Length: 163
Image 1: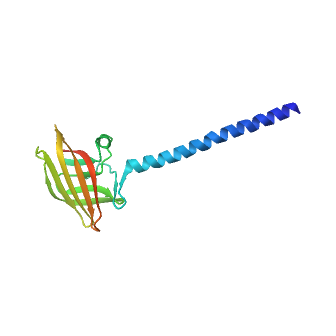
Image 2: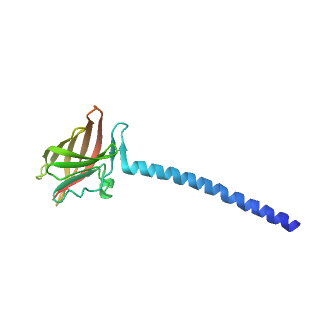
């Protein structure tokens, strides 16, 4: 009888010990994954959602591509890419968006880069300064996104243009 009480007590003690840490670990993992997902894939502005894109397959030669900062650029988490000619690509409000480049300057070794991009729903303005120039020119600046409904959002950008 004495062994039965000791065995039962040990069983209860072990069962209670295992349950508490497991519950707290699951909660921590859930909240970590939510934070990780929201910070790594979108710039949420409340009105304009800017998502991370993979480099577009349509771009074959010269291009410009930007991330929101140097760390994201090095991790290839781009928010914008264009073919340095007539077409730009972004993920806006959950949709892959293809837009026309209206004007672009700064690719020829100039210090300032500017681009105007537009489609029926968005108008994008890029303003950046050259920070380094080798094969690809590195730029840092800002991008302003304006929806046709009037909402605007400006984000810092870091990226490259080259062939």
